[in-house]
Length: 325
Ligand code: CP
Image (cartoon, rainbow, N blue to C red):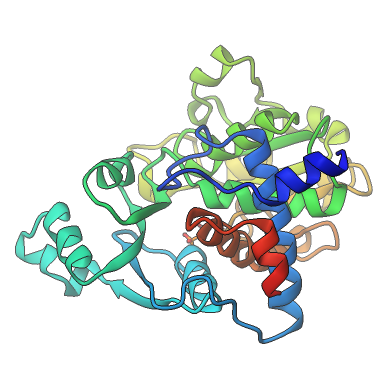
């Protein structure tokens, strides 16, 4: 990058109210989020410092579906930026009395909530919200549609090791059909120049992706030696209607990343999993805890990436972040 381009890049902001998906982000905006996350990660992991960017602003966690990583990670990120954080728990809110989502959100806005982070079992619920409220809306995972900050943290976790995602061969393995992580991951890695291959049983590999020229295979063993990154997905039994494979034992036999299968991979292959893990189903204990696995690093990176998303949505530049670090 030339010096002038670098100066321009440093003062660039994300010109958007919301973060709903990966498809609306450009290649440069994604790099920008990665570069901001790098700075936040260093500060977050090495010091107790808080940034002032969300001081006086309220962030609401509106999680209508269970979550450990995403909810806590957004919460920590918001607090590290000095926000006040509140939560709506669906089972103890007026949603159970029949209040509509829009009325709940209007109530949050009347309380001057500036950011709503939403997880919802229905695809596109955050898009609906973003059109009906003035607060910034961040998608924390909607149905099987999108999980943009998971894709950003996955991409960042590889980027910080390799310096670029261009030309990497990335496999996403398992329950692609029900996975918002897979959909957002495919968009992010292809946008950044990686070659994505999807692998899983035929019943969990929807045809739609072949339309976009994405390679698909049922044979995990054949692709392992070619991979730079293997991202293992959780079998989402809670979203499956009916039996989509004969048994867990059968699934494990053909699609689990086991110690023996790891031996077929390159020595420096990066093993990822978005969590929560079903140990012994899609990945075995040895692989989940081996040196190639960056599963816990992904969790740490989630905080840095979410700090970057909050900051950039409220108009902060890399220059601002560097000044305050
Ligand atoms: N990866 C992920 O979204 O995990 P949670 O469901 O725990 O948020």
